[in-house]
Length: 509
Image 1: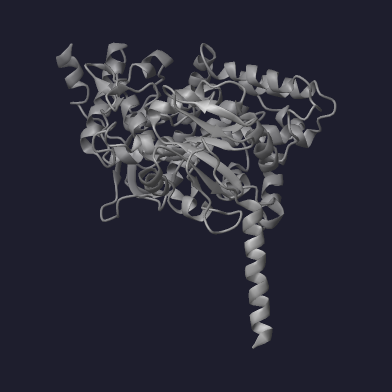
Image 2: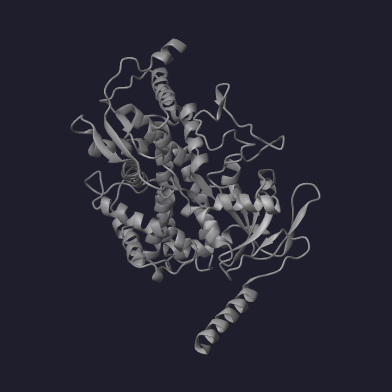
């Protein structure tokens, strides 16, 4: 009997000592503290299972600011969006780079940029993001349109006009992955498409499935064949291979030229940086495209209005929607698609679960509204979790319902949303906030618009009846756009001409 009791007692003693080592007590002026009973992990398992529900429950118990131990980190959640500006505009006492410097290099396999080994590189990298915005967006938009049509024609449009069956996520992934790849990195010599693209995409999906664990700093050596897969993905971007590609975007060209200025950066490290940009380009865009497509196809009224709007924009430009001819949308035309953009923003509201974080660089008092302030310790993470705002019924009526025109009012974009009678500065945040806002957000929204516009012009498409409504997979909460829990089966065929399309636009003129 004693041989069983003693190990059990020692186990409890070890657990207690670990708990004492990794837990802390609340100080005066600090937010309510939730340690959990599991040493180090704290509330990580509950948070991962249902982050939105977990935070809503603790907001009910502790108010709109509280601190939780999650996987060894103390995270202070700011739950009231009226308080977001106090965090976002705060100075260098709160910094995002410490977190990204620790996580991104380990995840993607390159040395830290701010390690002192590459002086000035970070500043150059930040400046390169301008090539994803402004006038530079025109070239990306034009290139993406051509590459979307290339993939659509080669894989889905050329051939029989009969109905075919496909998985919706697989459809979105195959088109958006390759079209985005071609737009960013260019084409191989003497051909329009890269060889091995299917294998590359499959390996990317395998890596992406492990991404939440890598971000949680689980050593890649413990994740089966993930390192081998990552090495294959990195090798695809070897500088010698990339040097033979043409029509590469200005953004990637500038980054490649920058890396060449550092003799201490090896070819594998350069390739790893390019691989990281691939993940940034498609890791969230593909599921965002899926949800935008899914909600349109499952809401006939939204589908009809958006399709009519696309035809109207073409007619105003003197173009006719010809199902047998490629159509090019300019950036100005895409910007004018008010209902399409609203439908995309609504699907982003429903599917995004990103977490905006800042790391405290010292012990200090974070001032919120009025005389209110909270004590923050060095190394603590200040977290904004916009999904809680997106699903707040005070801000959004019937927040769980898809309303394609939620962001349209009086013929223009609706930007007035309120909490406690006060207008919100931040009311929709799928792309982060402040200095850490996604620099490629304009390109991402544009390419989703392009994908959907071409889809509605060139395809007849229906969701196969009898399927359960698609739900969110919450296992990636905090990392961006949630994936679907299951895929959705669809029918599709090249679109048959309809004489009535565009009639509403003509009548309104």
